[in-house]
Figure 1 (spheres, rainbow, N blue to C red):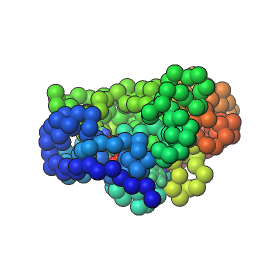
Figure 2: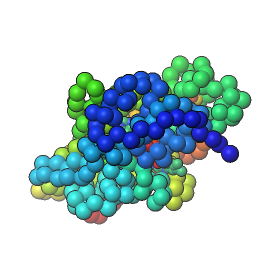
Figure 3: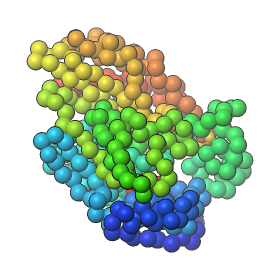
Figure 4: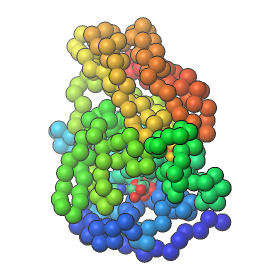
Length: 328
Ligand SMILES: Cc1cc2nc3c(=O)[nH]c(=O)nc-3n(C[C@H](O)[C@H](O)[C@H](O)COP(=O)(O)OP(=O)(O)OC[C@H]3O[C@@H](n4cnc5c(N)ncnc54)[C@H](O)[C@@H]3O)c2cc1C
Ligand code: SF4
């Protein structure tokens, strides 16, 4: 049986208290939301904090509210609450859909949207027991000095494996981040970095407080697609979100495609808008976008499933998403 190391569990009720605890204990403290990812990782010895700062009672991180301009989701809201909230379903149904496709029902009831956005990257050589990793000589992301995915590589390329960030990216979400020095806003496109060891542009004692989503203009359609071995539970092997804006004439005026599950961050696929903008969303446009996405995506062997098959599935996911939008 995998056991947890001893630690102290703190349950602050306010944001400033949570931030003080994180700052006081420095590298020996970590925030915990639902714990659905952090606890298994602790059992694998990937993190061994002496202090866990629970976020579930922090009032500033709770609640889903809306205004004519935006929807605000507290970081400690569960994925189930995001997936079923009437305002989210009405204004940004694609986000509800992505939240609904995370993991399985039990984990969605405790796992939070904040934990999903701040999810640690994953790798076939990292999400293993300490015994397993030791036998291989560890790796750059934890305890070692080599990468087993890119031989001779000096950077970790573990996979960003969360489902809501691609949709939040095409929605231009803004993240409210707090540290002991104050609050700041980070557009989601600047939140993720290409460093697989720590792929967030926030410090380890900073907290994601809430996510603000501007209401998309009329005529905007968004679709989310996810590839996984078992529909009931698994992490994504690849996922993507497409945003299409249509003008009054039914022609594409805005087009964005964000793909994740391959490298260390959700990536906006370039040049696809050239094929789409100004045209109607018909079979030739869909095929051109699918082909362009295939050319630009090169999955690595950071997940156990064959990278070539994952690459071959990219245009399939793109076609599914665009056909869904075209049929809406
Ligand atoms: C079997 C299994 C299947 C899964 N399948 C999927 C899947 O299909 N798709 C998917 O996206 N995820 C999946 N997950 C991962 C996880 O369940 C979800 O991503 C979930 O949303 C994580 O949220 P949490 O609240 O449990 O995060 P936690 O585990 O509590 O935290 C995750 C990380 O984020 C940090 N953190 C949490 N909240 C904050 C905050 N507000 N500010 C700063 N840092 C914070 C924690 O310190 C930790 O490093 C799966 C997990 C398991 C065990
Ligand atoms: S990509 Fe390389 S360094 Fe990163 S977790 Fe995997 S094996 Fe380790």
